[in-house]
Amino acid sequence: MARYALIAEPDPHRAASLLALVTAEGLEGVLARDGAEAQELVRQRSAPTLLLTDLALPRVDGFELLSWLRERQDAEATRVVVVTAFDELRVRAWQLKDTLGIHSLLSRRAPTEAMRDTVRTALAGQRSVQAPPAESTSTDEERQRLARVDAMRLVDDGPPEAELQALVSEVAQAFAVPVALLTLVLGDRQWFKAHVGLPHALARDRGTPRDWAFCHHVVLGRESLVVPDATRHPVFRDNPLVRDGVIGGYAGAPLVTPHGEVLGTLSLIDTRPLVLGTEDIAALRELARRVAGDLELRSRARMETRELGRTRHEGAQSQATALTQVRDAIQALDVATLLVAPGRQPFAGNTALAEMLGIPLEALPTLTFESFRQHVAELTADPSGRSLVLDLASESSQGLHLTLTLERPRQRRVRWVARPFRVPGGIAQLLTLSELGGASPREERERMLRVDALTGLAPRRVGEEHLLREIARCRRDGAACGVLLVDVMGLGHLNLRHGFDAGDTALRDVARHLEALGSPTRALAVRWEGGTLLLALPGHDAAATEAMRERFLAELSPSLRVHSVSVVVEGEEDPREMLARAHSALARTKAEHHARSLRG
Image (tube, rainbow, N blue to C red; front, side, top):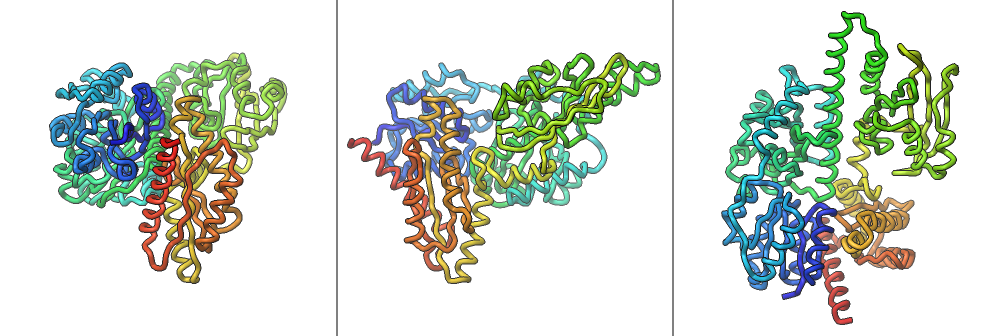
């Protein structure tokens, strides 16, 4: 058996932490971001000495991965440590521990020292599997969560809000699933705040019993949950919604507010098995975070409006209430806005400002104006010069107008406009930062769903659509269609040695080179999964595709190390079979490189 530890973990930061742990025990660490990738690595390298796996894996879940592994003759001695955030999944794994050959079960919340001791015990051939303690949210914490949902007045008797309905419709279309839900998990049921694609009975009732809800696992675990095939899953296959054919596959991300409260979930459902990759789940998680922040802002605006109404009859027109009125108004604006109180003190901002500048919304009132403008200046190419220019308007003027270019997180031109206005007790100012040629919130959501946030390339779901269209067009035209598959080497080790940003930087650099290679043809560069990138090359035969690969390698910086293969769709070959050939060829290339490095 090869002496290596296989880490099946979708989250790159957690994967890097586990990699450091197994490396300290003298094992080579190999990362897989989903169950299917883990299976492919085992096929190429043989079974590992140690498998560290989550149970909620995209494409192939952890239960199926372990069942498959135990059918292999070379996996008899593989030690298995399971780590998961979901109590009921951990309990079911404990019940199946002997069948699945599990040596240890840990909660995601276990400290590093416990994880290290568990790995050492497993490597020593000992089992430490015990009935997992209940680590779900305590009664008091759950009571506080429900009180918060009630205080925010998120549950209503009317029809779903049009804006939220539009959101879930966009999400369903972007992820190519028939059902999308914005769900609140209450005491005894899940309630659909917005929904699309539900069967009539569920849409009419706007909810189900909590025991049926996949979403309540997400809320208790405070993590994204993906169940690729619910009909075969040992925890969910007997769920009434699965038996009735409503749910074939599920993915849900928690609605976590900026203050850390979990309200419910943003969920995707398919009647068939759900084929979503790691990047899809990350995009869903980011959307859920934004939606939760928006729900909190709406609730806060409603509560402050009611409070303002109670004080108006007393005729109190203090500075605070005047500024609160303005704050209520700017929450609804799509333009990034900062309200500055007399004395140059930031009073409040809106979500658009927080997202543009990367400042948590709740942190804005705690800043001085000087620290705020210094933060903005740091996003430009000339921080020291810009910090002196960026300012508020003089109180007697009609306003201050500036134009600046932000370089981070992406380049864009921004208009800085400060306008003074009188409130009781002094002069306040309204500062707006508007992106010249900027997009609307809906356009920004659509852009996020069509563009990978880390690399700027198309995500896998967009790439698959493009590739299928181009292959069909090439067949009609009698032309070939090639594919270049590239895997960036050593991302986990880069993160381990130089910090989490090092691997991201290397991946972005390789992505830029690959994207430049395809321009200006009909080629499309795609972040396929994890550290794997794909370039679709319509009209390129085998020779031309291989020439492109060699050109790419020649132009790539020596500091960036990659594995790469080129393939071409053959005749009437199913495109998915071609992609499977490409992945197998890439896996062989990686295995051969590993074998050479061991010999060398």
